[in-house]
Image 1 (spheres, helix red, strand yellow):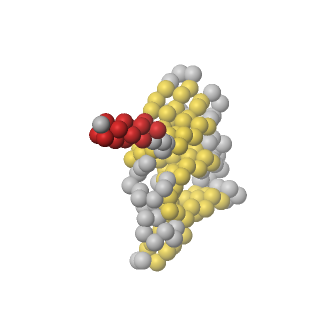
Image 2 (cartoon, rainbow, N blue to C red):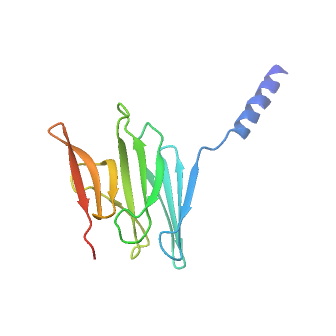
Image 3 (tube, one colour):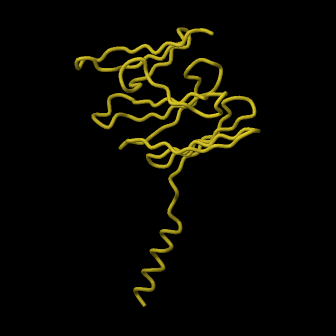
Length: 151
């Protein structure tokens, strides 16, 4: 009888366990809806428009909590997104992965910095149409400028 009571209690706990998935929905351009579902270290990106629907999953190597930020990172007037975290080491800087919307492809493409491997300590400079980040050259922190010219 005790086993039955314990099994029912455990089943009840599993049934009521919350699902830890954060969903963000936004419109990168007119008539396009993007939904980002962040679940642990996995991000599912779904894009729907009048003509197509596509979904992809992106894996992140992260021990710390991931966050989503919506912005126009390449200054083209279209909404993009970034997934960022505090670094897994001493927790002193942020690391961003940036995904820019490509209207002609109907999906997001990952943006890479002009130097270094990551967008660390990202700063968006709208007036200069540039992204500033940090990279390490010979173990010295150096500013990286990823510039976007005016079209």
